[in-house]
Length: 319
Image (cartoon, rainbow, N blue to C red; front, side, top):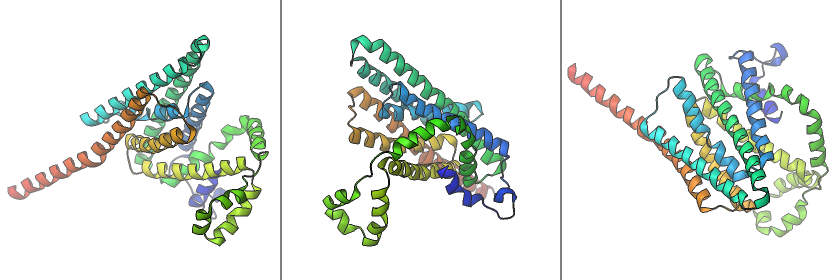
């Protein structure tokens, strides 16, 4: 709802039906995209119920570049050998990371090892299902941009606004969870700021005067939800803008770089232990992502540019 409201001004048109301009893409197509978007996000969140840690969750979601490339091949696209190699290395990295995490969980309790393994396998299956749906959605959205020339803000608005009806069956659960967030105590910003004198000196009095009452009165659960919504808005806006200018595979590779930052923060801030296998797996995942980015964004464009210059030189000689 937050994202839909933020994107609404870009679709506002006075005098039109519901004051929304006529979409470039048929609404039924946006509704189909919204349904897939809802399903993907629900599956990704559902995986946390099956003993999937945040680092493994991030790594497995990096598997999306593989499924997106497969979807591209099915649709007739062709990729260079280095692009295929980088995605193959990424696949190996994902498998190594999942194996490492599974081993670490099996060592926790021999009596419950089978149960833990079963729960972990279910979580893996859910995440992989989400990745295949995401790959299809990425290809489908790319087709919509190609056919209709849609604007990325239109995708942002309809992709979230048309998701809202899908949450109606979950309204009771959402109300209960929001009540829990609203019952949390305020953050107590005054005591925190008193200990951060450098921050106080570097921040203007007007900014503090504006933020302090809001922070001190808002339950910390609601405040964290708001911060999460703002950062997600920034993220999804960037993804939609990028998807309107790049291929679906390039989008997933760029997102892997963003996942690397999340992976590092999650490991440091929450104290996740990384085994040697896990570090090797994560290095393969993010290293292959960087390799694909270099091949796609630098080497191939330079190669095409050199060919165009060579062809231009031959044409001038023939003339």
